[in-house]
Amino acid sequence: MKKLIMITAVIALTLSLFVSPSRAEEAKGPAVSGSASIDIMSQYIWRGQQLSDEMAFQPSVGITYGGFGANIWSNYDEKTTAITETDFTLNYTFSVDKIGFDVGYIFYTFPDSDFDTSEIYVAASYDVMLSPSLTIYYDFDEGEGAFIVASIGHSIALPKGMALDLGASASYTMDNTVMGTEADGSDLSDFYNADLSASLSIPVTDAISISPMIAYSFALSDDAETVLEGISSGVTGEADSDVFYGGVNVSLSF
Image 1: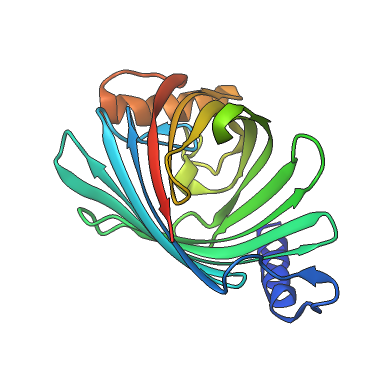
Image 2: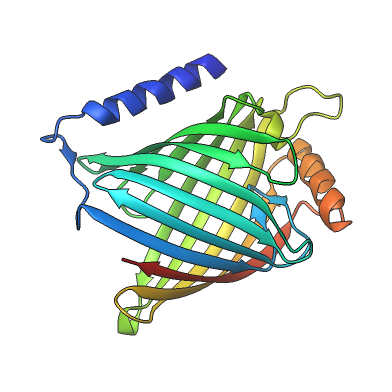
């Protein structure tokens, strides 16, 4: 199964580079564009894992050329007063009819440890009501397994260019040791976590926006609950698999 997922990802990436312009829509807007943002969060939550005990500051900067993109993202932990993680992403987006595709590579680095890991991913979304999407991540480095996320979302237009964005997702881990293991150390394959979120997009200028958000993450299986409680206990001192969190995003496009 692992080999099948990895082969699928590689095929999708290859096809994305050679897909005919008559079938795929080119990215709209300027050929080159950039963005910069910062998330100020009550905690650092990743796939249901509580990775900080206090506030987290998460700056990001990215650039796109047509459908190609590159991004650098970091997490600054208020408690440790240090950058605990920096991620590098390369990706390519395209669409065929109403189906949008995003394929890419993520390199996760952790400055205070010898641990780093790499994922490739393939995402597909359908341009209909609720915008359903499916993303398959494959960690071919430390995790040697997959992580699958299915999501839906809806945006409600509000006066003065504002929008209320609602989202929900559910995930499944497949022998990915980065996401945790069974109590006996064997690989874990089970439903993992779900996220419910709401954010309010507030345009300040044509290029700057502010988006406060709230979210709730919870475990979807007994095994995932045990894993998430163990991770939480090691970071926050409390064994929680369910967590409310929130923050605000400030973004600039150019």
